[in-house]
Amino acid sequence: MSGPVAGVVAAGVLVAVGWWASQTGTPAGGRVQNALDLRERVLADRQRILGDDHPDTLDARNNLAVSYSEAGRVQDALDLRERVLADRQRILGDDHPDTLSARNNLAVSYSEAGRVQDALDLRERVLTDYVRILGDDHPDTLSARNNLAVSYSEAGRVQDALDLGERVLADYVRILGDDHPDTISARNNLANSYSAAGRVQDALDLGERVLADYVRILGDDHPDTIRSRNNLAVSYSAAGRVQDALDLRERVLADRQRTVGDDHPDTISARHNLAHARDVAAAVQQSDTATPITDPAHQHPSEPPEQPE
Image 1 (cartoon, rainbow, N blue to C red):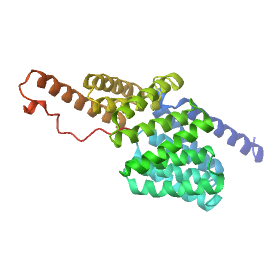
Image 2: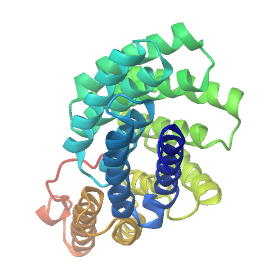
Image 3: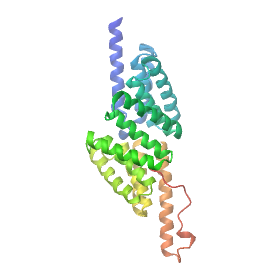
C-alpha cells in the first residue's frame, strides 16, 4: 500500500501506539520506563512520517516530556516543553488551547527544576489567559488558579497561597463535586498551605481526609496517593506524632521503590526523609530516658524542615 491511504493508516497506527503508551505506562503500574521508551519511538516515527510541525508530532513531543517528568528527568522534560511551547506559539498562535496547555506544562517543569519565580510568572500569565478566553469557572481556569496557589506557596507567599487555595477548593466543590480528583488535589494543596502557615492541626485534619479520599478513589499505588501519604507524614511530624510519621515514611519509601524504582528522585527523597524520621524518633526515645529537657539528646537532628509535595 502506498500514497495518501498508506499515510492515513500509518498515522492511525502511531496514534494507537501513542495511546497505548499513555495507558500502560503509568507510574502507578511501575512501567514508567516502558512508556518513556515507547513515546520516544512514537515521536521518532511521527517526525519521520508526518514531519516536525504536524499536530500529532507536537502532541507526541508533549507526551514524551510527561514521561521524562515522571521518570525524574527534570531537565529533559523542561527542554522539551520549551520547544513544545515555541512550536505551538509559532504554528497555532498564543491563544490556542494547546498553546495555553503547553505554557502551563512548562511552568510545571520550572517548578520541578526549582525555578520558582519563572514558574510563578508563567502561571500568573496562564491564569490571566484562561480567565480571558475560557471564563472564571472553566475547569482549566480552576486548574490554573490551583497551580498558581502552589507557586505562591513555593515562593513563600503563604497568605496569598492560603487565600487562593481556599477559593480554588470552594470553586472545585461547587463545580465538580467533592470526589473529583481535581477537588482532592485542591484540598491537598490547601493542607500544604495550612502547614506553611503554621496551622498544624488544620493541615493534619485535611491531610488525613485527602489520603482517605485518594485511597478510595485512585487506589493505594497512584502517585497522588503516595504523595498525599508523604504530606501526611510531614503533618504528623509537625504535630509531634513521631511514631506515626516514622510508620508512614517507611510505607512511602516502600511504595516508591515498588512503583518508580530505587533511583527515581522521589525514591531518593523518600529514603532521606525516612532516615531523618528515624533520627528524630531515636532522639525522642533517648530524651525520654535523659534528665532535663536541656539535655542535647532531646533536640531534634539539625535537618531542614520537611516540605510537603
